[in-house]
Image 1 (cartoon, rainbow, N blue to C red):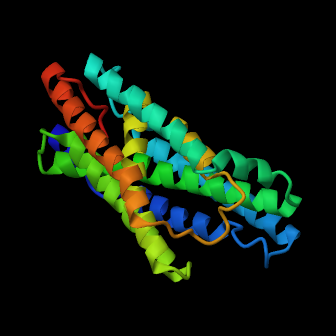
Image 2: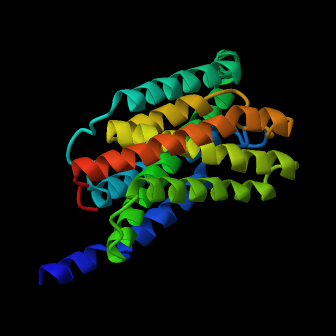
Length: 267
């Protein structure tokens, strides 16, 4: 009887379908075209997006054990703490050199319509994407691993698979932006960003913290414009070390979790 109950938990339910449906509905309501949409329409779209977002977050928290992956705080070794400090510094430096601060300051010089539009698009990206990928898909991957009784290397499997899914989502931008090269570059650095956000997710045992960080990173005046194209050398130099360090840290933590027998919250 208990085994049957666990099997039901590991299956796809109506909640799973609704969560994914609401993600795309919410993305549709994002007021991402301030140049062609009126201020009134921007307000209406913002309200609709906010309603869908709140429902989606509620359902994901319900499915994903109120955001908890582990039942206890993870014990980190000194090398693991050192790498985490380095990744935090990386995130802050990237935020600064990416021009986010200047772009955010410039945003508040724009019209109220532009401010609202950019804020809601950043909010949608931060919260819809994080609650779907670092919340729902983490939980779904846990259930799939449980179904196939995979107990080893779970964290790295979950992290890479959800980051690849997050990366692949950005291929949809091929139909939005004129430069396919810019989209392919976005797909690459989205994978690195996904690993970084997954690390923050594991450390804080919270989706909300990661969603806010993602929102702040995207909150700028250029978010509704075209994607810039950069030399591949710059992209690789910036994000390849991040990917390598993130994978090394996740593999190391996976071993710690198995050695210390840290228990996952039941998905």
